[in-house]
Image (tube, rainbow, N blue to C red; front, side):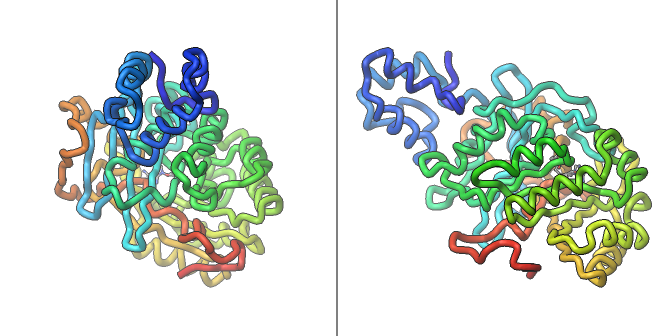
Length: 390
Ligand code: SAH
């Protein structure tokens, strides 16, 4: 049985052609899947019944299923999806009071980057996701929204390193930004990377570039190598140079993410060195206190250290944003739900059931609000007009 969603070469078009059926049927089916959120061919009532039956015999509308669903008090929802081969990935829906409905998606099962504080990479990389498996995460999340709401933003900040799977991510994002797909403008799509220079350069060459976020986490190579092992062979300079090129080529302000780990990278001297490193660049620094991962020996920086760190950066003139924590209580940082023993519990049926969990102290997802330089609305002011922080 084929997966219906498999960009860039969707199997539906040749399937219809082989049967001498008109090509517009493909558009009809896609409209049902992307706009009307149908989860079965039977629901596609403007298709002839025999065609619906034939389609149902040949294709699966979605190849993944929800193995677990959790909802936090602030409306954040996290899904653990089971893929056709039994592997599992997480995706998250974030809601805010500006009406943003942000989907945070994974690009790999596990991760090969080995960031020492991250749950996703604890068991290494299992495999890349296909483009269809990435798109399906949006479709599952979109179905959590009431009919009059739609996904407005995408952050590629879930499990995995997006730039290590660009061949699948780019066709998936093309569907996300296509008006016949999800219709989410490229300025509302942020890709977060550990900083793979070649991948950054490839992104910079796209005709319509996405927002770029680089996970820096340290102001020098020695410390960064400890926190982000994949960075050992790359070096901070190469990462910052590639990001500079990204800005020069696309005009898009780059966000640097910095996870504050208590006693490791959160001291004022780290902030001073970071300010030196980024001085004179049109960038935004996104600070977030680490979400502790059970079994790992790291704690999040205290609110006082976060404020102090922020103050040093601000005094040096760098735009800084402290990321708001979202999803208290739903199994913390990226990759944690997949590792949680409760993932073996029975699946949630359909879209009706949600489990409102009580907040567990310290459990905050890595997924936070998207960078504030991801513009809010169509017709937004031009980017890089300097600091546009609230
Ligand atoms: N591999 C990509 C995208 C996935 S991780 C990247 O490195 O950017 C998305 C963000 O979450 C990264 O900035 C990552 O460092 C951060 N992150 C991972 N684990 C975290 C944790 N326990 N607490 C806070 N942020 C975390």
